[in-house]
Length: 115
Image 1 (cartoon, one colour):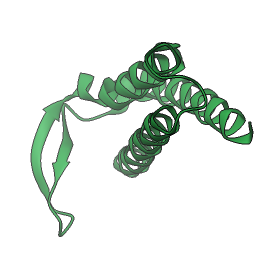
Image 2: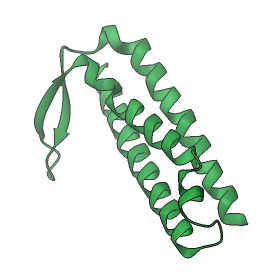
Image 3: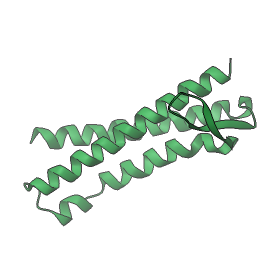
Image 4: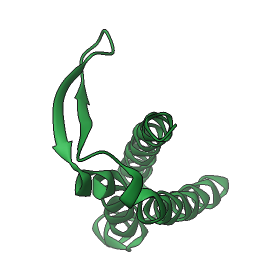
């Protein structure tokens, strides 16, 4: 099925982005300030700060969700052709895309802080 191929590509891209974000976090870790923003309001203002290791939060979260999605848990729980299987995989893709988007936003924000 075409959907299965798309699902596998979303998982692969998520794992690659997690490795990319984690690598950039390691490379620029020493240049980051001691307090980095970790929570933002709807107006874009910073609501909460965290320590430098918080830069690895989203890459690790993205990697964990991708690895859980990569497992055969969904296929074991529901038959491959069922609507529930597709629904759970669509939800997993949505979660991965959301985490990738937040990770990219934070990556660009931290890149601006390094200037």
